Length: 111
Length: 113
Image (cartoon, rainbow over all chains, first blue to last red; front, side):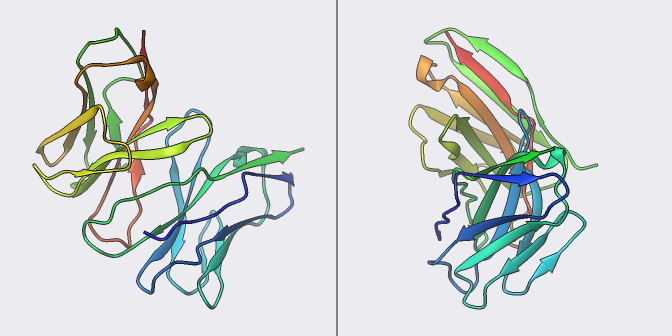
């Protein structure tokens, strides 16, 4: 499994864009990049995933570099409720692929 | 609404007890996972299962076992609970395809005294 590296913490002002980086330099061609977040005292929640193209949904945008060695999760207008730990995960397409989390980035959104 | 349900939100057990943590999913998912989460260590995979009666060790299987007798249910067993197994335990499930997300339960906070 490709490993990921994320900064331990980040701050963001409410209403501004939050850009969360992730390095995955050992990613292989058939591995997806996933993002989850965990709000205090809850189970992790899926946000978005992608293979090589940029992706956008109602929660966030995912930008993957052309060499696929890094990605950025963008929350376009952060709110206080976006305060959470954000996990970047790489996962392959094989049937028996385990899902491995790192320690994530703790995002604090302030008024 | 999709759901992963863990049998208890909070649990207190004594050292040496045999502890069962139950997880049920209603999405007909093949994959199920058990994690523990401790401050500063993130989520660590204990065991996972990709089919009934199939199991694979995760990163920290020592002191734990699992059971998957039915597709919808995945049980984590602490054969003889110890204080260092005090933790938040999270269950998740997903389809077998790597291109789909996992769904998590709300977690069981286990305290071993």
